[in-house]
Image (tube, rainbow, N blue to C red; front, top):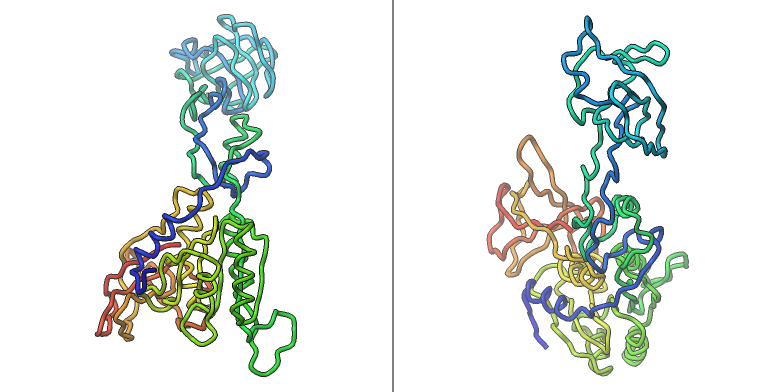
Amino acid sequence: MIRNISIPDAVSALLSSAPKLCPEEVPLSDALSRVLAEDLPAKVDLPPFHRSAYDGFAFRSAETAGASDRSPAVFRITKTITAGDFCPDPLQAGCCVRIMTGAPLPEGTDCVINFECVTQSEDMLFVSQPLHPWQNVDQQGDELRFGAPLLKKGDRLTPFHLGLLASQGYGRIPVFIKPRAAILSTGSELVSPGLSLSPGKIYDSNLSVFRALLEQEGCHVTQCCHVADEEDTIHTKLRELASRHDLIVTTGGASVGDKDYICSALEQAGAGILFYHVNMKPGSCCFGARLGGSLVISLSGNPGAALTAWFRIALPSVRKLSGRRDYQLRETTLPLAESFHKTCPFPRILKGHLETDGSVTQFAAHDGQKNNMQTAFLHMNALAELPPTDVPLPAGTLVRVLLP
């Protein structure tokens, strides 16, 4: 067991221990937010044929060469083609077809002119401007060619992915099975929301927030448990959860107090502890373990500390477990919007947001950065990782910024 581990080493330890899950096929209608389990190619050209981009008339562009108001090109209108129609006969010289948006161009035509740009007299059409080949036409394969790479393994499917897959005729999609996750909240002081508080008790917010976070990351949360600070009870519950889950997130009992039993309960259950205590503030009381086939991530009972460690330490491994290839947090370097006066011998993680003034983007820290506070996470879209320092950091200091 490694104590006082660095942030990068803690992240790497969890990533290397995340179990690999098998793929399954689901209907396209059930694939939103699932993670693709294999590369998918284009199955058809997109568009699959030359089609009109407007309501108008289709003909050969070469027959409009030199057309003008005084000497228009003249065509005989032979038929009307609407979206979904197909005209098997090639168009003869001197002829045109009335065509609607999205309809396939007949063989022998290569351009379309809008209704409002022509003069029509019964079945005759007069075009007073030259057109060039493929003008106002969506050509076959303009967007995608058959066999071209479409989506990659590890893509988390958005509504736009689903639309693209539908355009290619994919009815069933290979995705990774959702990780089965459980949450274990420990603490004799905790009361479920909705019940009355007695003196010395507090409401348990961790079960709610971590269930939502896990589901947001594509996990299937099948069990949320609260137990008192009793080592045997915690040990029994951990063994039970490990028997049917890929991931267990615990909150509380991760420090060194008299009632902090998570580590000893895991050891008693036969877990392999990956690391214990991370060199960072807040959220240092955080460790990882493997228990049977489960990855265990243990976080502080203090909501602010637990959430900090979740975003900075745990999140990449949860995303990797789900099959995503973009599991690492995005990083950049930005100046602090305001000075920060608190010193620390370890990296300090601030919750905040990005502010842009003109051409300058800065990191603005939120209020409520203490271990027990959750309000700093409201409207958070960035974390700043301040370096160890024994002096205050002035506004404008360049710091590492992570975007979860």
